[in-house]
Length: 310
Image 1 (cartoon, rainbow, N blue to C red):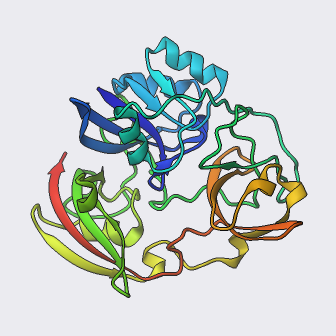
Image 2: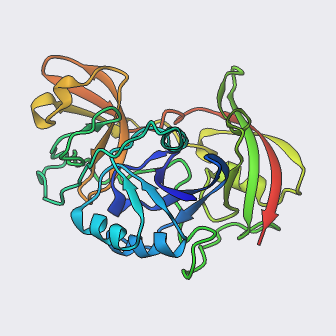
Image 3: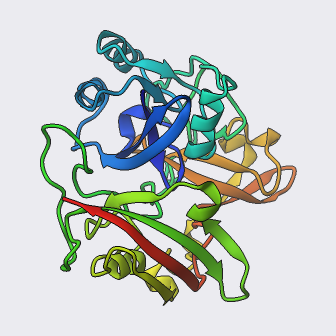
């Protein structure tokens, strides 16, 4: 069985038609044996059904989607589990345990307010309302995944163009599998593939990872382990105060039910969903932070190159 998840920054991306990447899982005996991230080849909506069919996908896990895409996937023989939220790996695990049910969440494509922060609502990780994706249009920012997105098609994407390779090195353009452990300067661990028991698979040198991580792997040898220190400009960037949105609760339907620290998705004027966290809230206003949680922080990685394939 092959399962695909709409993917961004490790989580289930909430708008099928706007997803730039899918994480594809190979499953045997209800256990994940391998995974890789593939790009969307610049396709959208109904055309993505063909991409998934070309990759022999049996099940798609996503947030919301329109009726046209749903019908196209049905014709392609792809089972859809919509309404999923949170970490992509956890969603797949829940599906394999029989704990993830499709919520039938649909995304509408109606225009929202045209103001700089014109808002049509927000969807939290916990919410599974039938109306799905209506969200807030932020300024010019699109969703900014941790890897910066894939410039083209990821590995294993049948019949599509090769990705744009932006780095030089012996592994550039090749499918690599790595194990890694990430820590802050105080020694606290923020992520580890070892803990999940699953490698991170991506196309080296294609900009799928944060810059410093990608640069480290592009010249590694199989079996080699390296330790790197990345300043914010080589990781998730500096903390940007312009990405902190102070809105009136009346501008953002549904925000009256949110709590400080809660993660939600907003929708920009191009229809793309991007994650924010509730930073502050009063009776009349809510402050949402669109910075990545590791923005402005120096990061340390222990990286092990497990395998390389053409």
